Length: 512
Image (cartoon, rainbow, N blue to C red; front, side, top):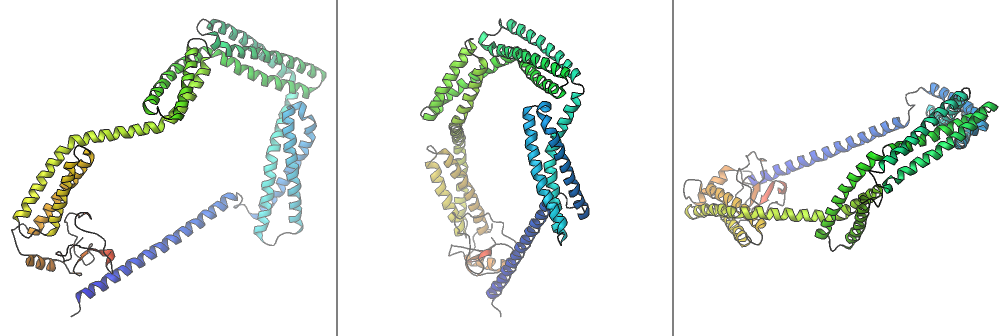
């Protein structure tokens, strides 16, 4: 008769080999999938980098020649417009045109040589032809685009020259309206003197003064523009018109700030009061959380100075907007310095709350544990055939009970954890004891051995099946933790499927 142990060992070895081969095959499939995904991403990236990959080669080469011709025309136009650019666009715009034109000329020379080489010695393969044409096309368009923007601005200036008299007249009217607006803003500031201190209104008064100075400059510029228009110097007149328009835009921004002075100062006062309140609370946190931290102490001194400035501003002796900016910066710095101290305080609060909850629950948990232990002890004493697993768990639960009782006052959190764990172990010990006793009173150890031997196929004494490898259903007994009575993890041929049972009296295979 063939040895059953040998058959089981061979089956387990075959299963292990099949599982390992399946794992290797899965790894191989994953590696192949990764390589295909990488190749696909590389192909997509190459197509994204080459925006002309769908363009036929013949059309691509013709487009490159057309782009080269467009760049040549733009360079010639730029060279023609460059002498009059300072008068039409201004000095700064003329410098930008010169820079862009120089770059375009360099690019034109490079692509011209490349195109000539391509025409004289055409490459043998289509890929090289496409690469050369693509490079020429990209270089030409990259150089043509900024140069074309400059030429468009020159064209607009040339169109403006034909109607420069009307433009200058319209700018005269705009300047007159801004003068009236500045005078009204100065009157508004005079009326706000009753509601806000002079030091708070001083920046807005400077805005009105600056606006008056700019408006005077606009008047002189427009007068010069009219004179140039009369003299026939249209480009110069256009330059004056552009300068006057830019200056009037600055005047409008300054006067808009002055017109919103009342609302801005009112909002600043409210935000300053809120900032002072928040920063004062942060100082209280410094005294409570970080009184011995030198870095926080330095920041606290700066905060106190900022609060002093804020107090002066609120009393009318300082600029509230400047004080608000300093208060805001000080609060941000102090919050960053106090962040770790506040986190530590929150952790302490959570630990205290956890301790209070544990103190309120530990007595009930110990009482529940005593009930579970009493039931299990009674079963062990009265029922026959209770094995070592139930007894070991009962002993473990009693040890945990001793620790919980000892730590109930000093460490209620740990005591509560131990009590609940001991209760769970005691109940599992009760289940194992009832299973050992079979629910029908005492019976012999020989009967247990016979029952277990016929219930499950034997592997070898001292080993446990981990599942349904041989077709049996897993036992529904509660899990056994390593610290109770077992050390999981078998070794040897059936190591992946078995667990060694340390108890020398329990030498029969059981489903894991």
